[in-house]
Image: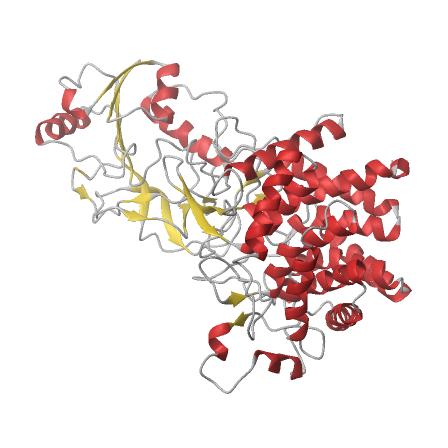
Length: 618
């Protein structure tokens, strides 16, 4: 078997074909005689611009196809009567199997090609068999319930010609998901070309550890070290003085390149500083000190009506979300409470005072505060304190209430305690029907830490019951992998099935998908503090369980910029990052330095500190 590969550069596909058979790899302009080969593959997907065959090469290849030999065309503008539109970016589109084909693909099953380039064919040849087609906004996690219109054919076969209209040749670098289905697609291409498929293909760029050794402590240490290394790599400057970049967007180019979310957010900077500070490493603690100087310096308003307001980011300069502020300052409050460092305690309390002074009578604040709303009008920010109700969502207010209580534990300001207790009691008076942003699971996860601080503050048995009620409700959605599935009773979440904005990962209750940006990421820190508040081994076991889950879910590719991180959407059955990519910017493959990586790492480190001090938890 002798194969000709016509391509402008090497790729995942050429590497594997060369290992599998006798082949020759040539650029289009170097091809002379195609008829000496048993099959031919033209791979245009190594560049953004598709291959346009020269008239001489095209004539030769069409004569070759007339002979009946197999011809595979990837990302080629024109062949036979098929010619295509200019490349367009795929973002919220997913591939759908038009029929059963290969060994692992069934009709209506979904495949993700991420931020791909697609050249939609204007025409198809008679008797074309469509194998895959693109569909925008698929209302499913894994498989469509019924057929949909196949107006955007992406992989199709006519006679002895197999054609793909998108870039596939670097599917491993591009982290196409799910792996088994893409491996089956590659198997299908190999068999079409007359090549024996590989028994196994290499791991892709988003490969996870997938397992954990017997020595939990050493596995935990390695996981923490890798995560801290990832965070260090996203600092704007190595000394931390200019903060940390937000992370990586969901969009992965078909050659594996990632899009950096480079805006410096106050919450990400404060959270990452918390991970560094808790680590106890002197170099990292020095970096954390510089990062907190930024948070409490120019990223906080000093003086005037908005004195103490923490800015959302260097971009959204005059916007404030209390949840983001809470996550930015909680590490400072925790480090002071546990006697690690109290240098910036007064700054954190100053930020809390602004929030407390602009809180509604029920202990909650609105979704956000915009300075613009109060400019040029006869309206003061202090008027918020006279409103009856804030926004009854754990997503927006639970961590703020928790921060107030932790502030009280540090300084004994009774207003912080009053409003912290009132806010959480307001939320729990509506529970489980709080205003959900992404899912019911997300609300449950968000409540563990604040309710732990509530009981730690009041020692009220009713507040203890609230914590255990939420914990037990959350465990209804525990998956055998150790994670917790997204669930939303009644599908009431604001972001459920949302197209064109922020979107939940949940398509249907029962999907085995975990959200590591809005749900599970809060649990290591929450369970550690729940144990600290209750001294109940139940929460130690929960902490260890979720840490083992995160160790297995951590990205592990040694030669990749994402090593040590966690993405947003994990399919817990496959144990790979795969899910609905409809969110405007933060789909299943996004990585947040603060919300995800730093929060998980802080929970791992604090738990290790607490349980190391009290080994009876074992």
